[in-house]
Length: 296
Figure 1 (cartoon, rainbow, N blue to C red):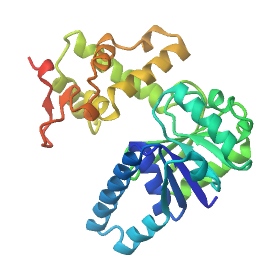
Figure 2: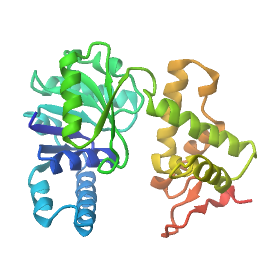
Figure 3: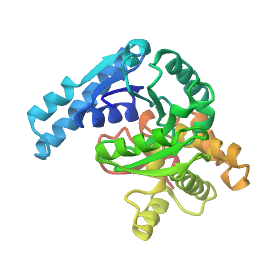
C-alpha cells in the first residue's frame, strides 16, 4: 500500500493523516469543511514543530511530511487512487454507514476500507458495501502520533489477507497492532467506558467530588489522568454514544449510561471541546479547575 486516504479532519483524522505522511505514505486528508482542513494542517504543523524542538525530526522531515500530504473537500477526488481508505468521522452509526456506501462506490475495487470507530460493529459497517471482505477496523488511540496501540478489528467477512496486511501496515507506522474480535466496544472501550461511566455515577451519588475521584484513580491505580478528566478529553458526547452502543449491543443493565452523563450532553456540556465538562477548560492554564457546578 502506497497511497492512503483519511476521511475526516478532526482530532483523530488529522492525527492518522500526520502519522501516515510522516511514515512515508502519500496521504490524502478529506473533509467537506475547508476550515476543518485548515485547522487540521495547523495542528499537524504544531505537532511537527514540537518534534523538531525535541530534536526528534528535522525541518527537512517536516517538509517531506507536508509534501506527502494533500487535502480535499471531495471524497471522490480524495480517494480515487487510494490503496487504503480510513474513515475517521464522528462516532455516529448513521453517518459512518452513509460514508461507507460512498467509499464503496467511489474507491477502486481492490482498495481496503477501514474504520477508526471505537465501538460500532465492523460487520454492520461492512454490510453496506459490495466488498465486506475488504472492510476492517483500525482503532487508533488519541493522541495518534504518540499512542502506540492500534486495535485491529476483523469483521465477520473480513479476509485473512486483509487482516494480515493491516497488521503489517500498523507495524510500519511504529504502532503495536492488537487483533480483537468484533464485539460492542471491542476491548479498549468495553473496559474503559464503563469505568468512566461508573466514575460519573459515583460523582452523581455523592460518594466523592470530581477532584477526589480522579485523585484516587491517579494515585491509587497509577492512571495518568483520572476518569472524569479523561471523559472531558474524549468528549462527553462520544462517551455517551459509546455507552449506548455497549448498552444496546450487550443488553446488560451495568452498561446503562449515567443520567448525569446524558443530562450534561443534552445541555451541551461536552468537555474540552465546549470549554466545560467536569472541569473548566476556559481558564487558559494547565491547572485543573473543577467546573463551578461541581464545586462543594
